[in-house]
Length: 409
Image (cartoon, rainbow, N blue to C red; front, side, top):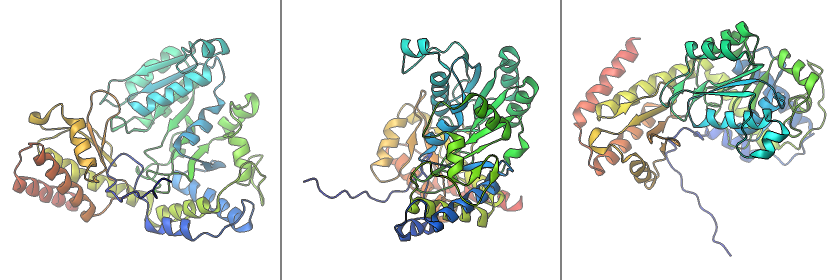
């Protein structure tokens, strides 16, 4: 027999999954065993969809959760893309790159898919690669949208592969200008940034995940939101999925024919445990307030980035939940070694997953002075253990100066 698995607690300071609130874990563990059509489970699902509309900032009726991870939500979103559909996908990191691969698979003809099933050359898809460490800005978006005039356009809002925030306003406006249907990967921005999706009418579909800004258990629900325009396209041409078909999924959340109804219809077996946890995570988000939570992320990211710069690191990111950096010059090229050294001490930071290798330090649901201080202390100690040199007093002075600036703001 294998020994019982014991997974140690770590300081999860990476790009995700994030740290789940004890209240969410308690709801998960205390939920009773109930079937997926139990009245209390269905009530929880109804309330989740109402809370999700507040969290997303939308009146979209088709707003609900797709059972699974963020990839489940993304698969539901891109399911409307058909073989031969013209697509422009903007890529500036690992995850938008995987999204673009998924789009190429969906848009590939049968012949193109058969020629290379795992990496098809779909001629109808234009992938616009923006260099690592740069954001996708309005000028880049407009240039390629005007040139290709696609049916669908795709972009990630926050790209955790490189820690960059992309121009969602420019993307939405360009989609409107050129009649494209915008698709957005909001896996890392929902629950972290202060935005309302109804402010971006060029985007017709959004997909996120449960384990980052929503800070729920990884295998609960991926939040999605679809406009009427998107649903109309889906009704006209169908979806290239059964499990994640947005219309069929919505029916189980009591959304039928574009309206909230008293009772949904069966599509998949939902877990009472997952519903209870997701419900509590959304209650927490609304209790704190999306704007308030976003302000905390901004505040603590500034303090963390300032401390890393004082240690000699070069910060290249502009996300508020994730800091991406290069180590000091005397440790250049040892980023992977540094990450492995930290992880061996249960300090869970991450490398970038594409070249050049950089260090990623995240603060998902670590929004307190104590948590940020612990990250700074562990990072600094690891840096010195590998030969880094910096003055602790200067780091403290920098943190205090930043704290005073933030307080004044």
